[in-house]
Amino acid sequence: MRKISILCLLLAMMFLGGCQEKEVLVEEEITINMYYGDQIDIHEYLENLDSFYFDNNQKIEELTAGNHELYLHYRLKNDNTPYKQLFKINVKAVNLGYNMETKTINKGNYQIFNNELEAGVLENLDYVNNSLVLRDNQIQGSVTTPIYEAPLFSTIVASWNALTDSNNNIELMVRVRVDGAWSNYFSYRAWSKNKINYTIDTKDQLARISIDMIDILDGKYADAFQIKVFLRRDNLEISSPILKMFSVALDLKDESTFVCEDDYYQVVDIPKITQMDEPGIGNIICSPTSTTMMLNYLGIDITKGDFARMARDNRSSTIYGNWTYNVAAAGELGVNAYVAKITMEELKAFIASNQAVVVSIRSTNSNPLTGAPQQYPSGHLMVVKGFTIIDGVEYVVVNDPADPNVENVEHLYRVNELNNTWKGYSYIIYK
Image (tube, rainbow, N blue to C red):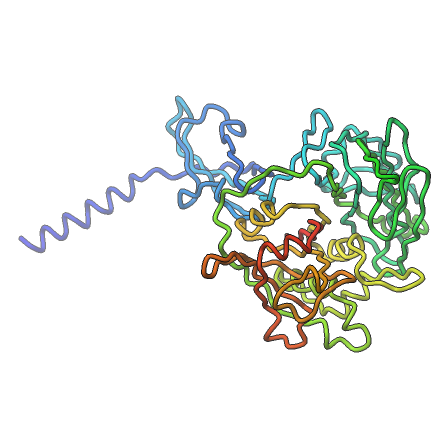
């Protein structure tokens, strides 16, 4: 009897397995671009959905920053066929606020991806794989954005991601509106991966550019900006530069009121690198070293010395801390990188979404960072990789490249002290 029971069980299992419905694979892939925590209505992407779930019942609003591939398993109304379809979900770390319909900036930052420039003016450029490139028969072209209305701001920092070489370049320019009048276009100068890049400080009656920052003069505020980008190559035999995106960071008159409601008490595993052992330039490459930590974390194999040479601003006094050039150099290596102006609450939100951030600070003996290898009256950059709380005191967990001992690069600084030494300017670097 026992043998017969086992045989019947095996036959039943075989029968049930043979009767299981096989899912129909839908070949069309769907891409979703979203911010961490966004609530996405899948019904906007597929009509007549009856029931559905993602792999492992994953909730997409809980996905961390980065690129994800998940299958949606679903049935349609009045159709009992089981389907599965691949969703490619690209999650940005924090929604910094922009309204595409009204072309208005709601907060202090916006990344302008090239597929969002339908309202811009293109000259001798084409869209190819979500990037802007020169047409085959052109050696120069440009894109001019619409006019972007913004809350009142005193400073604007622009940045971009492009792919260039020694025989082509891109040049980004920005103008601002103050009291109804427009400034001249301020140029970040021609940029190329394998050439000597340099900035020049200039000004007009409304604003001035110094290295990477465009400041409004006479204590006034601007309320709009416009960007123009040129793409160039030496001749038609040379490949076109590829412009992937550009961005702006605004120092607003009224600070963001965003409050992080997610759990940010965690630490991202960023590799530790000291800047101090690089021959000849170790004491002035905090920015390239911090960026190198982020690049190594993202799987980019480059040394801080090699990256410093890429990011160098060869002006009259060579500097390595040009924010715009550092993120441009990072973009040449295949990552997304931009300069942002964020608050402590927004920094917490980045960490909550598993995104470390490079921050620019300036500390003094009267406004110190307790426990730092030194104070930084001339400015300094480091990687904020987490938050923790000890005996009721909140700390940021950072990799401070100024520590000469690589094992001691990780430091804990009081949140209030970091906030007092940091104006909010940061690098956001991700894949």
